[in-house]
Length: 169
Image 1: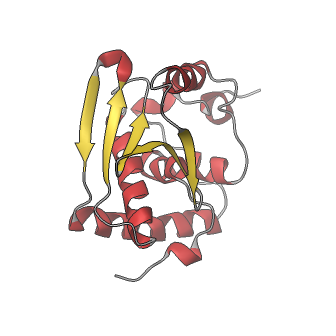
Image 2 (image 1 turned 90 degrees about the vertical axis):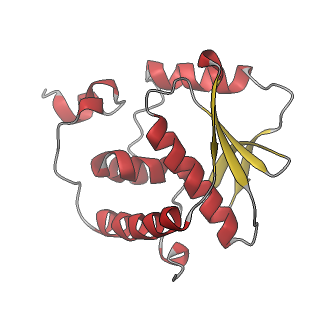
């Protein structure tokens, strides 16, 4: 497997999960059009992240990725709900992949949704590694071009970029 990481600068876990969710959201986010600051759902998520697991050191930065917290070789990602868990799982897998590329082997992940008392263990498979490699190539192509075409999806209504994409002045 070739290492594409050197070709794509500043792709964090959130940006990676956006690439799976919506190429347009990824493009906007990576081009510093950040509309999440005032979004109520994002505020709630940040509040949950800050108020749960207070004893843990949070916000660990490793080469462009921001891990909620790391303990005993396990990456923890905290989310406000399990509603979009597939994207959260992709984010964790991307963290595991990135750390593996840096030489950290046998790191595992856990998705935690404290308000639902939900957690899911995450490991990186060969299929995951191949998917991430392919997705990184797609990200590189998306970011080389102009803003991707608008595609209406089920998740759009809750997106912080909804007004940018759908509300005409």
